[in-house]
Image (cartoon, rainbow, N blue to C red):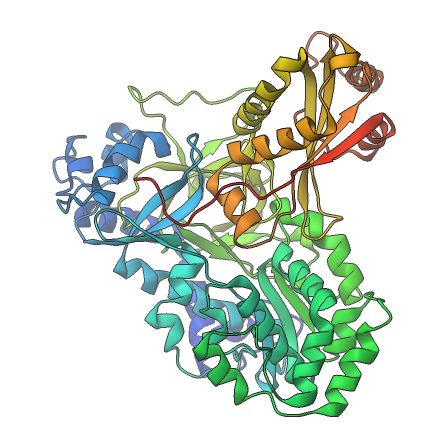
Length: 599
């Protein structure tokens, strides 16, 4: 079969007939990339021709690229928000999609601090499931024998809200894990998890993590791969083991589940897995009691062949700690997806994180690209739609901003991802993910941009006014050396009268005021998920930011164009800042968060 050598790998032919069909599908899609894209756009426009959104652009039933590009504007979330709000409020007319909206998928926050609502239709779940079905056939080319054991994956659902329309709003992965496609998936020997569905589908983060870790320990010799969605999730799981190994070992020794686990479904399924095993309990205690966590993954799960986690973009900051925990196991990034659309997969999953490229699957949606050159930005005007580039038009080495049109009704929507073309697989571009546009800080699922950080600083600064104190300058970074990671904000203050300056308590409350100003994704991560630690403000000596400017100028920056960076990661700059710290303050309490959303 031609597919045997189509996707080159060190191992060779497909592991089974099902894999061969999946790899053949990849070949067909990537060889005819432009034709597939043309057909996808035509299908989207034909399906949604009767919607209010498309009718206003006077396409007159046209489904061709030229008409679409000349008449439909490029938009952001704020442009679509009024339409989405009407759907959320219960308007069932075909506003964006001719198919009924089945639910809303939540994405990172708006300028108002609320999550974005991405409408989706039932058929999209099948499209997402199709992409998932391609991942293991590719991985099996590189890592043989994955059908001989299990995967230890820490997977979680999050709280969901209900819109006035009755439709739920939840993260895309929560939607997937609660879907019939996931819950009733057919047995696949290449995709067996140590975690029963019931442990994944518990919204209580502690009970879910505890029961998944317990099952992972029981099956430790069968585990062939470890993972979580994001690198931060796997780091958090190891930290959880550090904090809870004594109780976990006790449960294994006695065969009885921790009374803190109260979820009936978890207790029922885990009780069938955990039996008294004093030898395993002794092993867990011996490995954990001395506090040496170097190589802990391969010590506890000795047959682990790789880590399956996203370590591109903001998640790259977790590579050193994962190397420490795993003894430098390979880290695979298998797919590229967002709440708006699933995009593609990594056809060479065993490469170094710095070399990860994703191949766009042209059947997932219609993709366009805005050339990204900060020195010569493209102006996007609603009155004059720009001619964006198609998948077939892209050039190796160039950076582009991604724009999508989906079957669910998003048309020419700016996702905000900046991608660089590194090569082609057949006719499909392969992209390196560079960053999410405008994002400064990210520890877990949170994404904080410069405007939001500025607002948070301004709101916290209000507490300083009665002390005749102002924030002269500030910058920030995401500290992932602590587990969980947390935001660090450097402040330089102007205190008019040092004898009546702000107290430590006031500065602690400034930390909380900043957190209260950040978006709901951040606050949920702090309060419900415990995946972000308390925000920290470090007060630096007067003149520190002048020194920072001097340092930048000494390295070639223009004094006329110099701007204080609002986020730093360059080691010499962070060392300079830390050497000037005079006091350190942490948020004294979690910020307010509720799963109830304002609609």
